[in-house]
Image: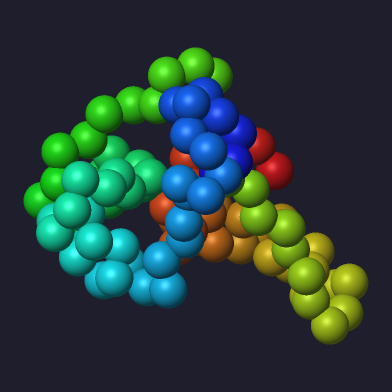
Length: 93
């Protein structure tokens, strides 16, 4: 998020993370603040959406598990299902 803020010429103090999605949406509706989210989520929330200028923004996740067998299972056979739950797009692993 800091890199995106730099692209928009924001000072670090101007970038905040809300405690909940409800708090973030409420803040956006009450003020002139902005919410960084995917287009589909903005649509679900009834908000107007615009892409961020510059390089595409991507969020990544790492798999952690108690055993390596469980981690491999999540990275392998359940990869697409877990990605769908996280609203991930693309084929990166």
